[in-house]
Image (tube, rainbow, N blue to C red; front, side, top):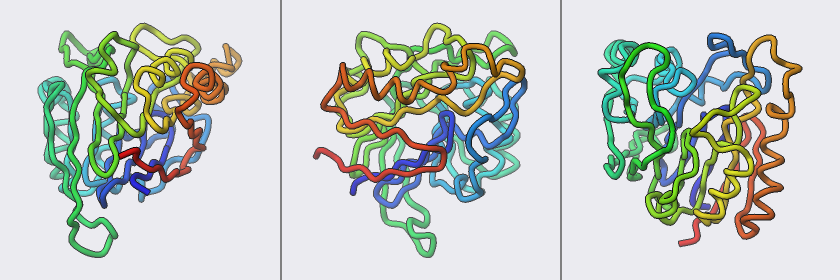
Length: 272
């Protein structure tokens, strides 16, 4: 098997490829401002073990300094260009924890090498991470005028795995992302209505049809919800994963959809 994907909830995923562990948008908290975790246990300490962390954009549910503080010293944090200047909390955590930060623009790459692929010795594996554009407001809301473009990332190892972060559909998505084996696609959100620059289950299925990966894993749904709004459009919390699988069956029938529970893993093969 080429890659193992573990979904911890929301947009937090571990991608294990070639002995390298890559963690996306870590959010390890029961409550964030007006949001509370309604489904799934908090990820265990082992979830914070990674060779690199990919942060897609500056929104607080994707760039969460307190969650980054759980990383081991030396863990590389990859962020959009401009994030360090825009978010003082990122600078403080990186300095306090000894986390090297790499800033990328779309099209730029960074090589990530495994520190301890088996947990007991020096690593020899490596992957290349390529930043790609995302159609999403990347500002650190509501703290000021800083505009830092949101990113997706493609992890190139034995497989090519696309982590979309938060994005809407855009005309050149397939061209800019390129050929991928696995697509981690957001299919919902954390409230009863999705704003501009997001994928819902239908649009995520269209993205799967355009990208034509071997496998797709729905993420970014069914984890956090605003306090006091449990009865407001609850289907938007519960149903996006199943609805994505249904819509993908119609629009992208050759794509295998793997709907994971919180903390569940799946091993996937590459087409190459």
